[in-house]
Length: 158
Image (cartoon, rainbow, N blue to C red; front, side, top):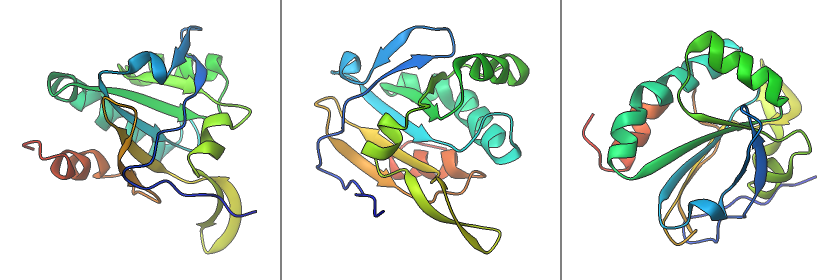
């Protein structure tokens, strides 16, 4: 099954997902703000922890520049709440067990894992502008150093 990849200028697919605190969060509810939506394979794994901690550490400066940050994985809200608690995360974590957003963003499909081709979450980051359009689409991002690179791509000082 081939997944459609999004490009800058595309309309960002809307979604409504349950957060780690049990509330419903919709992308369309954040219109008028810039939103970083990032997809990661699993809470509590080393790479995903690094990435989530990096986003949490950068959250104040990202918010200061007008960005909200949403982290999306197939994990259940309870696991996300444990992840937040365990690693003192400050970003919004969303649960997508039915892969509604993962599929819409092309962030689920074939990927390389330890030299084998597997089906799974493709670590990806999107920046959605105030009008709900994709400003930046990055697939197969590296967990480590990703936030610093993203800040550079967005023209933010490191």
